[in-house]
Image (cartoon, rainbow, N blue to C red):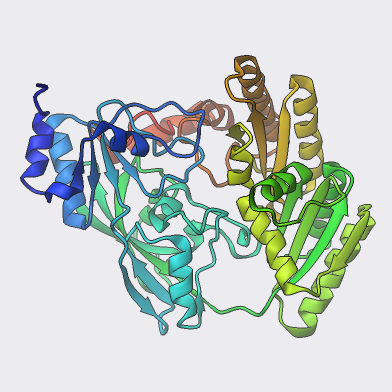
Amino acid sequence: MTSEHPLVGELRTVLAPEQLVTDAEVTGSYAHDEAEWAAHGVPLVVVRARTTQDVQSVVQACLRHGVPVVTRGAGTGLSGGANAVEGCVLLSTEQMTQIREINPTERLAVVQPGVVNDHLRAACAEEGLWYPPDPASSPWSTIGGNVATNAGGLCCVKYGVTRDYVLALEVVTGTGEVVRLGRRTAKGVAGYDLVGLMVGSEGTLGVVTEVTVRLRGARDPERTVAGYFDTVVAAGEAVAAIGAAGIVPSALELIDRHCLAAVDQWKNMGLSVDANVVLLGRSDAPGAAGDAEAAAMLACFEGAGATWAAQSTDQEEADALFAARRLAYPALERLGAVLTEDVCVPKSAVPEMLARVEAAAARNNILIANIAHAGDGNLHPLMIVPPDDTAARDRAQTAFEEIIGDALELGGTVTGEHGIGLLKRAGLTQELAPEVMAMQRAVKAALDPHDVLNPGKVL
């Protein structure tokens, strides 16, 4: 009989029995996120935390035993940032689901990290309020995970990303202390922006146990403009034209025929069209301003060579197209192993970047499907490889690296919203100068001096 690790025995004295999971079949399901190609180890134990005290107890115990802590939310990440390292405590926040406050006067909400994004948005809507960050995974992803990766989403082209909405955090540090960072006030510049530092740090600087987010008032109904294009480059030209015209849509999404066909095959939504690329624009400007903005987007679509373009008069049809956009990634996963890019380039460079993605696909003989938050230049080329085809995996990895290099050459970044995790570590060293990497490592060493929090990720 294998003896129990002393750390697990210690955790049994401070946590309820059902909070500790050691069964290999169950712990295996927690060991990795949705980044299928990222490596992962076997956790020593999974802990389902319920309170800040639970998290603090786990971190302090891990410090005493020299065992790493990897924090995980819903596991919807796409960079391997929540993947287990060998022998770690995998700290799940899935049961930390309290919405503690929605304050209409101050326009803020206070939540635990396991609250699902869409659940928060629905609760805010009941108060006539709106939480804007809306990653495509919003029906499943959690606020804690969104904070960890500084998640964006469909409407971030106009309304910004998670960091723009996080006012305050409660965090368990790498030394096992519980600290509160940030503020509830509309303004405040006391000290360094430690909240901004934590957002996007992927669990390497602290474990987030409570989040205070800024809310907005409910917005006006959106108008949807759809366009069909023969090539991704032509659709990219429409995106660049919209930016050059000074139009800021509430969403501008690109979906190619591979994505729509995969969604149809899975959900039988009947959305496949006789076009290689669909571009979806939305305006939530009020009244006549919204009408004018939608008309201007339509003109940009037509000017870029759309084979068909129109403003939708059927809200149900328009919503179905955006639903297909959200379903694209899981639909493509059904076709084979998927390696996901997350590069972001200046809007003016979108056509050239899309052309380079197509060139990488042809050069490496790989199927690359394209979805994109096109309005802010955040592209998600998806490399799809048949199961058990090692040679195709190698070619896809080459294309992945080429696309990163092209994005950097065009003035872009290796990740717009998915994070570095494991998949983009080499790309990070290409993007950041050695002096800047040294600054990043100094921050990590200062806040996690024992390297107990998600070691081996990001840096």
